[in-house]
Image 1 (tube, rainbow, N blue to C red):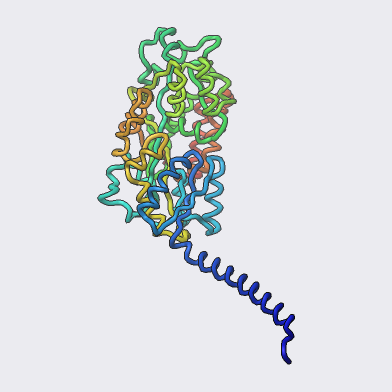
Image 2 (tube, helix red, strand yellow):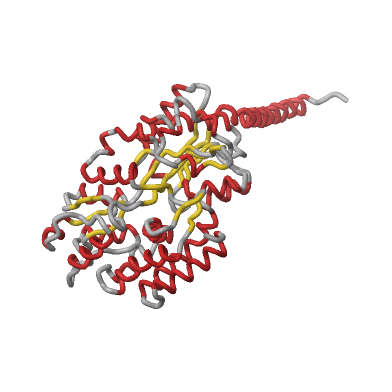
Length: 414
């Protein structure tokens, strides 16, 4: 039977529409199937996004066959976002992630081996001491560290002068004595971040314990009763005896900095952003190496790195981008604290007056923080125990015994 003219016209229109839709589907399917080879998706923390955009343009100009899609994350959400993506196998190609969490992902077999990126252009010897070791397992390296930071002593130079203190403390005994001298009805000698992220408080606890006998082995703390007890005594007693502010129970790192900038805290162990903020505000701030038992104290270094998920669609492109970002000049431009590579630290922005102490602390008196997932799981317990000692509900001896019992259960014998 012949098709009538109106029916034939209608059929032609439908055919055109169907073919158009099919064409779109085919085009999208084709683009989707090839996008894994020409696009690199990079999850970037929001604080890095502006500089990252500039670096991406440079990378794309050097690699015209690749396009980088930047997706912002935030400090509050990145841990959960990355964990969910890796567990589901639906991942970006490159992720900027905390070094402290990499061992967890390595243990689950979720990261690509990046060992081949290290060599003449990016030698491991150019990274901060021990830094590449904490992102390696069985001789394979699974991340490229780029940002590194630690705490140092921050102090109010005017309050020191008023209290008759000629120079910052260099030992624990001097730290305690100076804190007591600084304490008045309106000023506390020091403070601790007992609110906020529990790892901020446990980091300071481990810094003290490290100098009394605790060691790190393969990213795992090997605690001792004496060192734990001394750390708890230094932190807890300072609150119970009143030369560390009792408002520590309500303060996180930012809260301590705010009180310091109000002239209500004389000194504390804090990060470089706090010192930078004080300097920008023309505040009477000084910085010095963290005090230890008999001289400069060891502080843990923490930072961020680039990881490539094993499930990434464009592993080769991600490796190229990680290598590009690992160049000293790019690392220096992106990092807000200190770069992981020693050669990148020559940039003038890392050598301001308040940053000099931090640079020396990192280079001479720091080690990478532990990143064993079993230690991470213990942090809330340690945090609560420090608070109990500071409240006076447990003695340092009782607190140390509790932490050692928990450590034996979670970390094994010391």
